View (cartoon, rainbow, N blue to C red):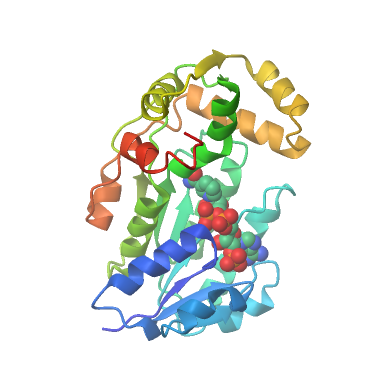
Length: 295
Ligand SMILES: NC(=O)c1ccc[n+]([C@@H]2O[C@H](COP(=O)([O-])OP(=O)(O)OC[C@H]3O[C@@H](n4cnc5c(N)ncnc54)[C@H](OP(=O)(O)O)[C@@H]3O)[C@@H](O)[C@H]2O)c1
């Protein structure tokens, strides 16, 4: 049976990786894939490969009715709207309501680990979205995606430049996974035919502390990197002095709190089970991206 599969936010990093994974399949026709995005011009390369590209903006629910028409299974990629409290949850709820109106049979959603208890400041957006999906009555697969290995590019190059990595995560561990591996799991969950609902933690096979990551980075780059353990107030003050935008400071502090409290350290084999591929290990990822780290 040919199913029509839709990916929202398809022009983002994750969305493109999902499209690439779907297009690798021998059993999925490009024309059965719908790539929905705010700016269709960004996906001209996928349209040229036969993918249906449709305009969809969660801030403009009127666009979603046409975008979701005829779709069987939909991957709802969480948006990046973190600047205005409540906006992201409202966006996701608009998408779920439109999926319901369009008769979508299955929703796959990119959540985060343990949203019920996670200290991550935007965990309530994910929990609220999971609840809205459950309340819609649509069958669903919730992918509680652990931190991307790529997140390390945000702070590590600067830390390597200064030789110091400030953290309030203590010995807390994170079960990083490569973004492409998480996207592959999402593509397979989307393309599956199961109608049963499930929740999976999508994470790497190992969880590592900041000290352990720093040791890998020192070995790979040959550069000095001292981990400086600070408390949350000291971390926030350092970010303020470094020019990090005010609204991002509590968000980043909450990441370290969540790591310290163990909410980002859950390992799982669901990524491998769903995607059928062995997840990349962090050390191999860091070695492959040595230049991006400034190493
Ligand atoms: N697990 C992690 O470590 C981690 C790290 C970073 C982000 N994330 C989450 O995962 C998502 C995908 O990650 P990414 O790396 O692909 O981020 P990204 O490249 O920054 O993509 C941002 C995403 O938000 C979508 N978006 C923004 N406003 C939207 C709107 N009004 N309506 C519909 N979609 C909207 C974009 O879609 P279009 O531009 O195509 O419309 C795009 O898919 C992020 O948005 C964030 O929620 C997770």
